[in-house]
Image (cartoon, rainbow, N blue to C red; front, top):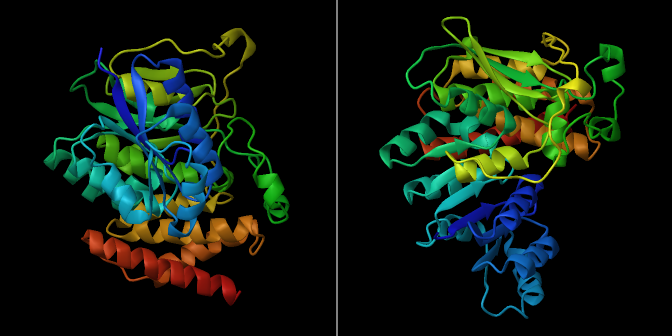
Length: 386
């Protein structure tokens, strides 16, 4: 069997490191062809020494010399730097699939380049579909490029739909843990700290996504993703707060039947399923024991978690509004992590940015770039003047 060559965009992040564990469990099937990182060139170099890819790339040009020095004892591994290098590496002929696991807007252009190169896309970068879902889906159709979801919720929906062919979806049931502040009052949420928000009750994720989970913006992003991935309007995508994170999501069909995918919180499973679909491979790890878990479901509080409502508002408006929302969220997320704004202030700044930024009904890729820059400026000014 020919080994599948994988390019991991964001190999030093939570998804990337777990993807490398999947590759390590199946060395007869998969090889890491290219590994990329933003800042963490030390970990990138350690990964390269273990997996011996053909190339490593840092998005930061100022990190090139440091990475090159760390790689000097592996002369056969090419070293590149810069955003352009990320877009170029995904086009390499030997690559069979690209795991798009970079965090944020920066993942958009490399993913577009991979789609145009007709590489199988294993999509873990939420912002790609949040910002430019219509454009991405159009390109995937044009270039006949498969996009397989890696997010646990969207993988669960995808798995629930296997074998259903053209059976009509009545509703998507998108589960959410509720984050660490599910039972907090508004007064308590006003006083939460960065340390509080980074203590997620069930998932081990990077800092940015963990904060988005605490505000439930992450779930809003996933509503938008689900709309584009599965062709279901947002008003038929229902968010269910499920603190145990055992039911990863479900689909209700027009006859009332509900199919769900269950499992322990382990991102390696959806990563591996995207790699191996339609085949299921063995995976080392904990198994679900339903005797040990009760399953609870609650409605989300859209007033307490305003970011979730803002996401529904953005997709209802359409155009570049989700791009505006995402850019503002990236700014306030970083500001909260740097302790420059309060937890409730994040939603305030996002909402105000959505009011002020220029709306474009049918944006091009150039318009998305302009929108992203404009919304970031507005959000930063709002934070500075608050």
